[in-house]
Amino acid sequence: MSNPAKSLPNDPAELKAMIAALQAENAQIAAENAKMSATLRAHDQLVQALRLRIAKLQKLAFGKSSEKVEREIEQLELALEDLLVAVAEKDDTPIDEGLDEPVPEGASAPVLRRRPRVSDATLRERRELDPGACCPDCGGDLRVVGEDVSELLDMIAAQMKVIQIARIKKSCRRCERMVQEPAPSRPI
Image 1 (tube, rainbow, N blue to C red):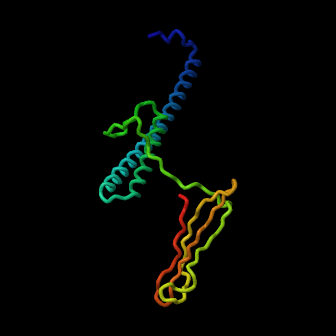
Image 2: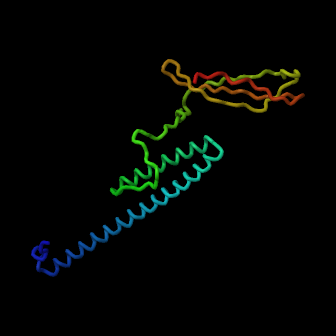
Image 3: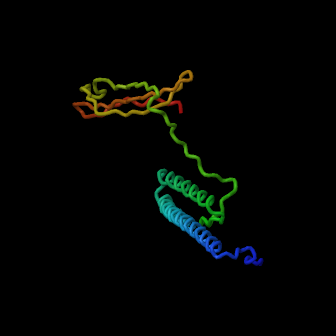
């Protein structure tokens, strides 16, 4: 250990200034450490909450099979992975995920298909499929009850438009039968 007393000045005013500067630096470092530890605690709490939610949903998944539960589990696992990556970027220490099973090196997270985002300014064309004015069973008058609208993307010569297919629902005034045209086949 070297002797730091040789590099210190003899003037008490200079020594007091150095002490004040070191104390300010220590206070700043302590504040940064407190802020960092608070952030890490918040991340840890969120990670624990996500782990509990995933465990609960996995228990549900082994009961009655539901695609919604499986999709939610996948989304939560992705969110957990993002949080762990964010924490790992801030801290150089290895993170224990608490998982007992080793993950194969070639495995990757499942890719979820998402609907493409189409702006509201995109040209839209509406096509109505009307079942007619009279009931196919009894010949009575039909009244409009509602409609099912689906959207289909269509690309025409480097131009996109949304085709809305409205299938109008009607019911017979005599026999109360619901009538609606079947949906057209789609390319995909």
